Amino acid sequence: MSRFRAIYRLTCPARDVDARARAIAVEQSVEMPLEAIRHAHVLDEVVAQVEDIRPLPGGGHAVTLLLATATTGHEAGQLLNMLFGNTSLQPDVELLDVELPDDLAGALPGPRFGIAGIRAATGARERALTATALKPQGLAAEELARLARTFAVAGIDVIKDDHGLADQRAAPFAARVEACQRAVDEANRATGGHTVYAPSLTGGPRRLLEQARIAREAGCRMVMLAPMIAGLPLLAELAADPDALGLPVLAHPALGGAARIAPPLLLGKLFRWCGADAVIFPNHGGRFTYSPETCRSIAESARGMRDGGARGRADGTDAGGGVEGLAPAGKPFRHRPALPVPAGGMSLERVPEMLEFYGADTMLLIGGGLLAAGEAMLERGRELAAAVRRGA
Image (cartoon, rainbow, N blue to C red; front, side):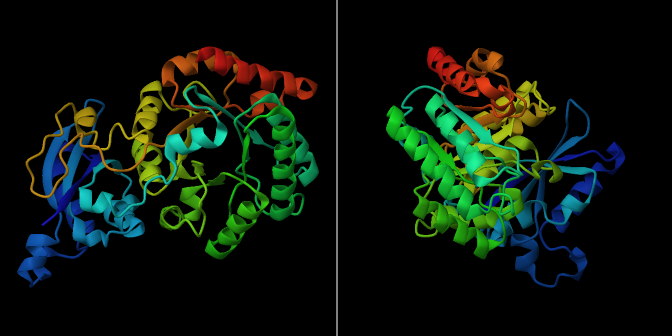
């Protein structure tokens, strides 16, 4: 019987840890009193098991559960439910990490394009990539298109919609996408560049699929999606079905901080496992409070370097192995690596530092830092593109 590890941070008083760990195991599997279960196979094969409880250096305890793979239905939404459904409502628990067995990992699509596909689309074969955002919302479609043209002429690799752009009256989705893609195409023809425009897909499944169709027909070669708003199961279905989308997906982290799931797991692993080809996350030192260690872990997780689990990093022990049906710690899954995209209040002056920190398999996203240049926006965009090429 296949099981997989889920690791939680528990911050209750130490005297209650054992009882709370057992309660979480029940809550995340059968959600009822064990004494009321009359079937031996449910007790033996379905009820989650507490494998390990260890104190964490920063306070609290790491609780490792063994969850039955069969309870996930080998589907992204039910996997999330089994990992952290009811327990997410308990304020003393955080989901730290997950180690998936091969049969469950194989049920998740992973990136269809990944780093290599994005490099092929942009022509950036070895160096780091650059990105910027079209904002603010409230501008007309043609005004946003003028920004897109400027950034494409400057040589920025990826120009994305701001995640606040949806289907608002000021710049309806279809009009915005057609105008911005046309502007980028014109700039690419003029410069010989390969800039990619990524419109933001929003709304429920039917509207989102219609927007994906519009984007494809307009010639877009990438889209952006906020998985915590649209839904990770929807992302997984889009990534698995080339007829539904068939384009690289840039995942936006909006609402990710509300989940009490450790950022390296949510943004780095779960987004990628469900099909994100590139993952935006808050860089350290910007307007968000992520530490350098968290950012490095997100980037490594997105690239697939931590798929075996981070239990050793979380509680100071080795992840180990030896449990039948569990993927050995550190074993790489078949999923392609996704491109990490640090962002959030970044400046051109920090480019050398970020390149040194993240390396070449990275896309640096600077939005407001370019838009604030006003009349000098084209020049600043060219400086960003040149700084990244120099860093290579």
